[in-house]
Each structure stands twice: as C-alpha cells, then as structure tokens.
Image 1: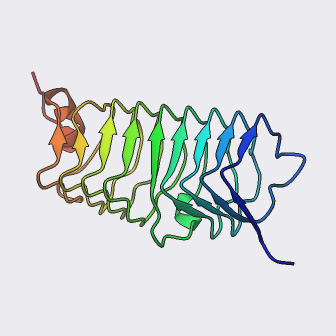
Image 2: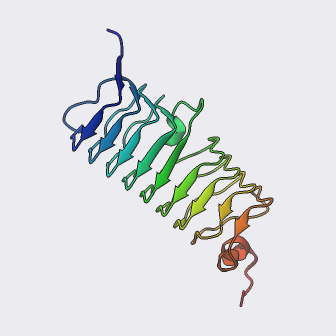
Image 3: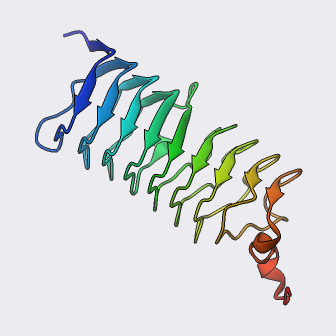
Length: 190
C-alpha cells in the first residue's frame, strides 16, 4: 500500500495516542491541540507544517522528516530529534517545552528557539551556527564540542558553556550570562 499524501489539511484536537497517524507525507498541514504523546512518527514526512498547542512528548522520531516545520506552544519532552532524517532538517520553536530532548550531532544552523524551556537538553556536537535562543531557559543543557559561532544567547539564561570545549567565535551573550561561561574557573564575578 502506498503512503498517504495529505496537503493543506487542518487536524484539530486529535488524540493520536489511541489511533495512529497515517504514514505518509503531510504538506502545509496544521495540527492544533493534538495529542501525539508516545506516538510513532517513524518515516513520516512533515513539510512546511505547523504544530500549535500539541503534545509530542516521548514520540518516536526514527527517520521522521521535518522540513520548515514550526512548533508553537507545544510540549516536546524527551524527544530524540537526533533520530530524525537529518537531510534538510529545519524547524522553529516558539514558547515550547523541550526538556530532556536531544539534538546530538545535528546541523541546526539558524534554528530559532523563542521563549522555550530547554532544560537538560543535549546539544553535544550539534552545529548551532547563527542559531537564536531568545529568552530561553537552558538550565542543565549540555554543550560539548558544539558549534555556537555567531549564535545569539543574549537574552537566554541558566546556561553553562565551556569556551574551551565549544566553538563560540562571535557568539552573543549577555553580561548576566558570564557566570555560565566562566563557572569552571571558580571566580567571583561582581
């Protein structure tokens, strides 16, 4: 059976924890108030779709395609974005909770995170060149061998980033964020 192709469709308040989302490609679709927690998105393609007020917590993203996808006010706990198909992977997050998720080794150039909770998120070896973290809580998030060149963290907080273990050339940080950059040196910043 061929995979389903769905275009310009709106899915509202669907509970996909009891019924599965049909495998296939979703192009220019809107998902609003849907519950996808613990759902399998394996092999599904989302192209220029928008998710608003959705719960995707602990969903399986094995070989899932996200191209130009926007997440607004979504709960995305414990997602392994590093399991996604990385070819042309691109998304934007606005007012989302992404705690305990992983972006390990992904190329996320120019990705925008706006007013998001990013606690305990794994950004190890990710390429976040020119990424924007606007007003985000990065408490406990892991940055190791991460490329943050020209990234903007000027309004974000609670991050700990070792300048010796990450590439931060021309990245933007606030004065209040200095303890997160210099914490390993055990110095007092006044």
